[in-house]
Image (cartoon, rainbow, N blue to C red; front, side):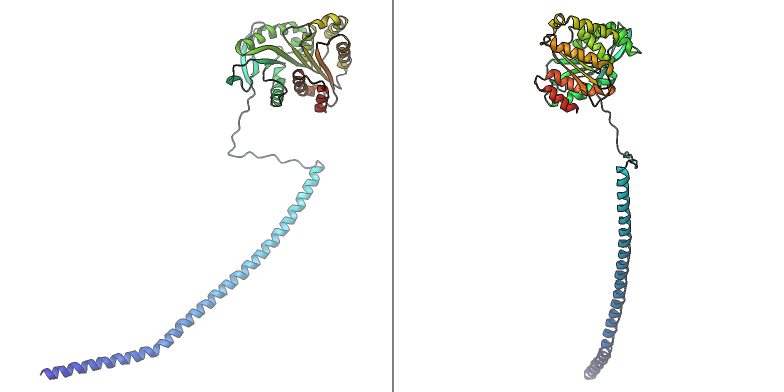
Length: 353
């Protein structure tokens, strides 16, 4: 019984081996064709991809060439437009395009000095005095010279900028700048008709306020333009003791000043006795014909009248007008009263030209 079972089992193993061999042959016959099919599909896919890539490269090349051609045409047009604009700009036919403000830009205030509101007993009104302190004022205990500017609404900024440049060049010491505004509707009132009152206002109220609130030296300078220069010239002719230097830009010589000037000329030897340490600087433009003769007479008197102790200079400004002399006069005048070189006049004339 056992032998029979063993035989059946062996026969089953033989059948399984034969079946395996049969399937192995069948699979071996199919395998090459399957490999060829996979290779064919791979080759076909590469051909398609290559064709796509080649097409894309050709398209990109043609597109680049077209855009390059367009850019060259545009560049040629821009170059032509720039050349035409430059030609028009040189001929003054092209308006300059304004700058555009950035959305993120924040405007900043540029402050010049400070305004102090004071009350004038003489004029029974409030007014603003403009004051510019030296850069190092708060960091030192020093006292400073004071420069008073009439028509302060107009010329205070001129004095601040001019003095800043001169101080940087060591052509003048640090100083306090004070702008004095007009108090009357008419300039004639302050500088001519009521000049005595305006002078009293400066000496008793303005100077007192400045000396009482700031560290000041006794040396003072005063500037005036046009009728303001006429007022300053009168202070000089009156032997005014409160100022050491007088700077005048294009003075408008009134009839009363002419008479006072004549009296001064007649008493030159007596008048110059108070002059030691004082400076007088006067400029006038070519169009100031009414002042030219008087200025020449004054210069002659100062040169021949024994005013050796007065440091003075009168200068004709050939390239400026009556209304454009203030800044040049303040700049050169402040430099003059603080400079001792003998050739300073040549330096100033070179600056003005």
